[in-house]
Image (tube, rainbow, N blue to C red; front, side, top):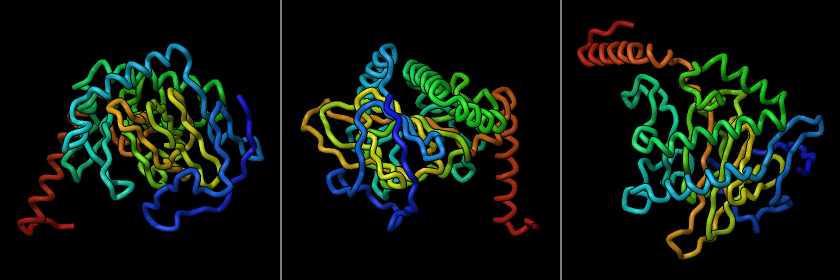
Length: 292
C-alpha cells in the first residue's frame, strides 16, 4: 500500500449544502485510484482506501445484488427512506443496524432497524462486513483503532454494536453525489467506514477538500476516515442508461444518540419511561399545568 503525506489546509464550504464539483472541475486535487494510506506530516493516519479481500469481494457482490433487488429503489417513493438532510435534495437510502432514539419522531429507545428485521440475511452480511472493516483499521493503525474503541466502547452498550465493531448503525446510499459535510451525529473520535460497490458509471469520488485529495472508491473498496471531523463529499457521476448501473455506498458510524441506551433487555423499559414522561410533559403544556 502506498503511503502519502498530506497537509491539512484551512477550508470551509462557501455555502451550506455546497455541492461537490465534478472531478474535472476541481483544482489541484490528487486522485488516488489504488490502495493508499494518507498520513499527516506528524505521521498520524488521515484516511485509508483499500480493496476488499477475496472473501469480502464475494460478500460485497452478493450484498450489492441483494440491495439492488430491494423493492422501492426506483419507484415514486425511492427506498425505505429518502433523505434531504445534507443536500436539500432527496436521494434514495436505507438505514441498517441500530436505530437510535429520536423523541421528536416519538421514538424513545434503541432498537434493531426495520431494514434488519425485514432483510435479516442482508443485515447479517452487513454486520460481517463491519467486522472486516474493523479488522482492517486494527491492522493498518493499531493506535487509531485503540483510540476509537476506547471512545465508543466507553459510551455505547455493546448490545448496540455490530459484531463487536465500534459502529452502531449504517446507511446505504444509492448513486448519491453528496454535498460537503461532516457527520455531526457521530460520536467525537469515532471513525467511519465506507464500502463502495459500483457498476456502469464513472465519478462518485470521495473528495477530502482540506487535504486536496480524492479517493476513487473503486468497485468493492473500503475507505476508513474520521467522518465526524473531516469535511468530505461525493463528486457527480456519469451513469450508463442501463438498469444495472449503480453506485452503492455502505457507510458505518457510531451515533451519539445511542449513548443513552441501556442493554437490549433493559432498553424497552427505559424507552417506555421516556415515552410516558414525554407524553406527560406534552399534555401538561397543552393544558397549561406544566411548571418549569
